[in-house]
Length: 255
Image (cartoon, rainbow, N blue to C red):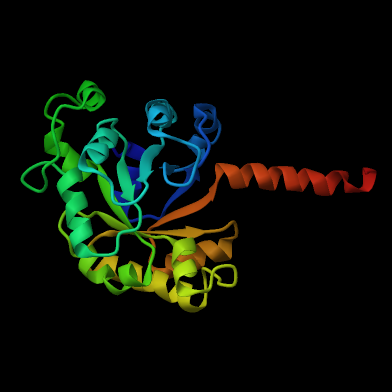
């Protein structure tokens, strides 16, 4: 569930910073996980599949970083509960466009009376006891990702759904569907307006707002000014690319 580092910042209303994992290797989490409040594990666009999750979530636990798993779109209820039974801090559901879709994911992710999730996950029982269902509705986050003009139009209704804990913008898909992919800045124009609209809906309904920043202090400020209280920065793939590119600049004169 949510680990102490992230829980403490949430309780104090402090910004919460995380990164994403696209490659399957628990060693990556061991190296960089301690630097972050959360790591979101990408089952949608990364090279990770469900069989890898146990070891990655365990690695997050070992270094004290909260694991959040992104599922590829509106997922079957048994898949949502299976992932949450691994005892991550939560799940992100990609490409949610309507309140009805969000309600279906609440049904899958939350225990009665809020939802209809099945009880009995092995790892979550072993770690939290057989009464874990009394805590899980509050201590495992259900985050829905808003990635289209339709989702943006409906974001206030989606944020109002009981059992949805937060909304996360999908900036690249949003830019693609707005016809501005490759030309848009996350921190100005239509995409920044979408960010502020999503964050505002979250704050109105007391939900978490999850957004993105690049690698500069100014981008972090802009993300926080937009209203995001969870900010994702970089990814394992980006860190590898940037590290390699930096060394190439050093050795350029010797080529």
